[in-house]
Length: 488
Image (tube, rainbow, N blue to C red):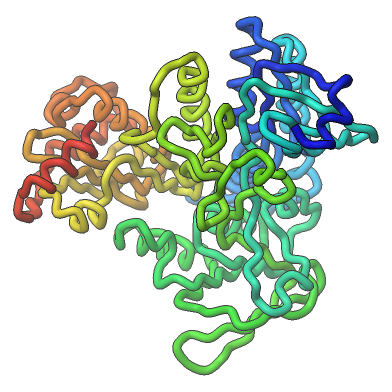
């Protein structure tokens, strides 16, 4: 115990579990264990319930849906509806989002109260092994001792060390979700999930939008047909897409006039806009936590180092969600909760071998689970490819939403190795295939199922009834193991 802890020894509070952060995995772990009779404290610095209900997943999808409604107004004549035009009230768009967020925060506050969790608002940091000092929001401090401590402090938007970027005070997703006016020209740095969702939404709400990405393709880790499909979609909607761009400098001030200077294998170019959104990756929130005082080590990328059980290098200290280097999805953080819940009770549940599905909420959506073609080829995995355009799905035709495709990779044992959909309600369609993959069903069970007509799910019958294309790689022992991993 440090001298600081000795000073507080008489006022220290004992807990079975202390959690830093109240995000997805953290809150469910706290609520569950508190309801079982354990004494649990959660320390939250700012966002009650974490980023998802406050500043990320749910608020952004709320705004994206407003943009979707706006797109229907723009296409009204296509559906036989005559309108005299429309205007965007950005303040009301954001007010709708704020009402939703307030309701979600109220639900979280009730859950903390009803579960018996001691929710402490302030900054928590280690002062020694198993000791957490909380500098309270309203002044003062508390010293907590936890039999187990969980670090769930999440990540934040990365600000690259580009000259002038910090001084330009660019928007991150947090500030973008509080805009009360539509930017006249939004510059988006980054072609990943966050950047693409915001770019399309803001374009549909009335902004001129330019995307500047350092990679050769949007979502460059996905298959070329997915990346090119997104690029075509964005260009068709009037979004400027600038790829292979190295940002050299930023000048001006976001919200007034901001300029970005970049090069593309040649002379430098300059682009001017009214606002700038930075979406160039995430940085783990591990500073000012005193981790070294508890013996908690970090990875070379700054994330908390954990094993497959989410245990850190310090006994009795665990990490959960994005700060632990887990894939940056709320549904993965929730699975981390299930893993930790079991392991804190003496179990041995691990993170390895789990499915990591994703759905990006552009319109149409891009969703995938399991292997992509790019990954399968890199691993030497043989597969048959089933692929159809969304226009082959009759329900998509009734909706006038025929852009995109769906495709599936099937192994030699007829099990589904991976599935990608770029199409209307892609996330819902993908989830059906994930369930089939979890069950280990051969693709023929999906092909021969009786599905309601006309639904989007019915398109899976069309997909798996199509003629497959074989991709022949040598089916080595390594290939067989990779196939088994993807299917299992």
